[in-house]
Amino acid sequence: MLREALQRFGQKLVRRFTLEQLVAEPSPARSLSTLDLVALGVDHTLGAGVYILAGEVANNQAGPSFLICFLVAGLTSLLAGLCYAEFGARVPRSGSAYLYSFLTIGELWAFITGWIIILSYVADTAMVVRTWNLAFDYLRENQMSQTLHESISPHASRVLTEYLDFFVVGLLLLFMELPALRISHSSLVSRVVTLVKLLVLSFVIVAGFIKGDLHNWKLTEEDYIKAGLNDTFGLGPLGSGGFVPFGFEGILRGAATCFYAFIGFDNIVTRVEEAQNPERSIPMGIMISLSICFLVYFGVSSALTLMFPYYKLQPGNTLPQAFLHIGWASAYYVLTFGFFCSLSARISSFMLPLNLVIYKMAQDGLLFPFFASMQTITYIRITATVIFGIIVAMMVFFFGLTDLLDFRSIGSLISHSLVALCVLIIRYEPERKNGGNEAQGPEENGPAAEKLTLRGLFFPDSRTPTPLSGRVVYVCSLLLVLLLTLLCLVLAQWPSLLSGDPAPITVVVLLLVLITGITGVIWRQPQSSTPLPFKVPVLPLLPLLSIFLNVYLMMQMATDIWARVGIWMLIGFGLYFGYGIQHTLVT
Image (cartoon, rainbow, N blue to C red; front, side, top):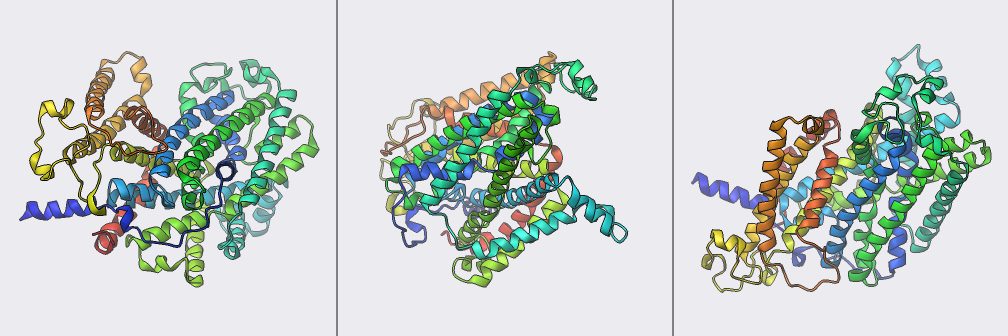
């Protein structure tokens, strides 16, 4: 009896949607070309991050090796982009990591994905609000903070006077958002905005290489002493600074933060139903937009660290500040205007993807039906906006800029890892018959006619996927995720590996042997022969490499960040097991 109850409970957790079960919605006109999708991807990806990250990463994490951080983050995003591109070609519906998880690995994983995406969007908004205020305060030489502190400090605590301006800006931007909830950018507007961003950042790159000084990549102890920072040279294992003043650990920590700059390309897959030729244009749009963004980020980070000693960079208004340093005051104000435009554009669009995820989860029964009316009833949409706007204000008040960046990056790294896992699993699945959840094998009796043997793991009898081979890949994939997580935990303590301590070295070797063996089992299983315009190459290695890099970057996050994410997930699990699992529409 207990065994049957546990089995039924486990089956509920892995219930999956099929494409035929998705709620049918009116299809928009297919008007977006590949160029439109590239412009959309660049517009959403090449945003506030390029202005924000320099002060946070170069100043105290990576120094001039800031550009290497972008290289690592860009490679990680490119691998994730390949996985999104396959799903964009495979699933002819506008979707996200939430939809792909629901179609592939089941209801619980889909809820986890959607819940963490909600946290990411809210943290993204709080981060941009905080940066907008920091930059504005810096432009006015801290007059806002000083005025508030002098005027209300006799009547309120120091913490409140220091951060009240964040509430003012947050509420102002919240009310600016309310009338714009129904507005969507046309392809022409997206092209124009993208072109303006590229022109402004191209100007930064050219100016940086004209006015830059290679000595800023070779700073010594004497430079730090002259600047009054004589203790800075001891922060990293390379001693007196140079190109990598904070060492390899600083590069990894900076790469985890820089990952934020590449967030946004996945918005392309939400426009599948509007693409003229989605099977071809979605993969191309993702790859081209990521490549353009990487080249721009690489150029801007190189120019910025050449123009400006990294220890003088401040959070907030970094790009304009560099032009003050070289004496180009007019360029400073032009870039400041562009900075505020980028931040305002980011703010004005945050509720659209957030509303979409919440609406989809409510439509599937995982959230309260109240949210399923967001698209049709105005007051419900406004109420939801106010609720999440209050959460944004609270996050702005309690968390620093680096914490908010980490929240956003963790959410995207987790969702990208799940998409890579989905690609790994779905490529080895048999076709489902009649659009149901049962898999169709080559034999009439399906799983009853198959037996799992050691020989069958490495030399399967069938050349096409069967229910048994699909289950083998499913279990092996989950085991690999667990082993890769353990490997990243050990590698995160890499100083002990370099010291020659035999214990961690033995653990690493053992984990690598297990990972290699299980990967070999997956590699030997038959793949689906369903023709697709784009497939992730070198399966199963590339999805596994993507998961490894994502997890390793997540290991660079601070422990307190993970504790706060854990609290958010506990709230989500309470919601899912208390409500969602009983009201889901999946049968």
